Length: 316
Length: 294
Image (cartoon, rainbow over all chains, first blue to last red; front, top):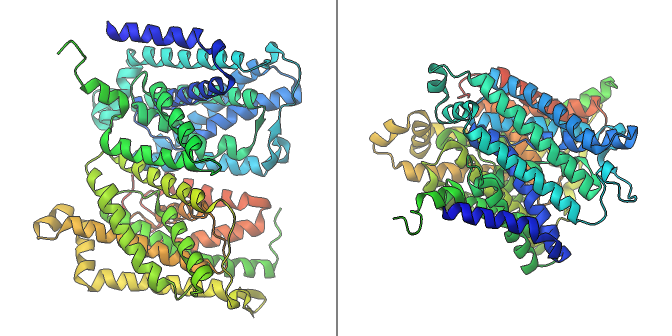
């Protein structure tokens, strides 16, 4: 009961408070939501299916580039381009997943091959003039046009990413109680045993892959529209892949709210460390590295795992 | 697209072989760590980067020759490696496999960005008097520092191989890699051996770092490309297969430099990644077998 009330209050605050926030805090909140969203998308494959992708930047980049190119070259609204990017990313995810799973890559080997796929796309983007090579693509600033995913001011972007994050959380919750969700967790715990009990491991993992890559690509489109600039290392670089998994690991992989909780902790930590040591690039990522080491060492199931193990107050 | 005339081809082979030796040494350290600790060390390149900075500062502040500095950095990084293993890795020995992987990833992020915070992102170079020395071999140009790096790397790798074969500590390391429980039952102090193995891995990559600084640049992310190359090499040579790592180094060095000659821009990296993916998919135990795939 207490959890529902707290959740309702938090959701109410997220809906009502942002118009009254100073711009700096609104920007931070948008980052929190975007990272929480990417974490939630990664979580479906990494947390529930236990397949640790180190290459989700591939899908993020495909999403960002597809919608941006469709918009710049053909004038297709990014709202549609977003879906096209998602579909393309899911197709690429299915191909990469089919190859990796079909040939039995598990654990760290799967991580390495996904990293390699993302890096290959980055190298291709850097060397392809038609997609702006290493200079990237700029979405020229124009009048606000909601139909083209261009808004005046930051607040509408906030509500878009909030809706996306809530959607991802809702999908995760549905997944958790679905047949697919149970199958994925069985695969995560012991793939051979799951197969022996009749779970189609390959098919289930591919479904998780398609969903996870589709959602990640939508995040890529949001990024492109919000910052109006993308380049190969921003979108396809390892940093994006790490961001997604970091939120989920810190918050609690394989839990519905873990990635969002992780983002609410990590983003302020990064902002604080940047404010404390000014003018030095890298402080925030250094702190991320430290947090990752500490979480693995002391909270191997993330913050949500830690919360769960403690008896609820007043109920012990 | 293809412009492989005879001279360029020969030059590519020479460059590839010379860099391949260094990849081999970096990968040997990675392979040793994997063999004994069963973890893929994402922080391997970051340790190399730190060693390159150590070489840079010794040269810039104290005018120590980069090759001579190995006498300091080699042992120092051996100890640093043991310290890292004791403090960060060993306490998580029983953590899930993917968590151990994330642990070294966290370590890599921390070290790389520590360097960025301390020394900014500027490219720094170490250029001793002999940095530009070269001679021609047939039609190919051979840069002396690259030749020294390759020779030094091979000597170091062979010395390590001898160490593993002939000394008691070396035999204990191999025993632990082959049969962890048996090694423990035979009274081997497995905790200490794990630390020593990690230390040796760090020492190897530190030596490799010092060897490349006279012709490379030093920057916080310089280790990343070596790290990825070392992954490719180790997978190619077979995880935990030591001789395979050295041979794999030459194959990857050649693939990279032939790719660079045949393809424009940075597409050469595509050749290496493609090789990586193909080997992971089709020969996960490595080209020469003996490795532990999947």
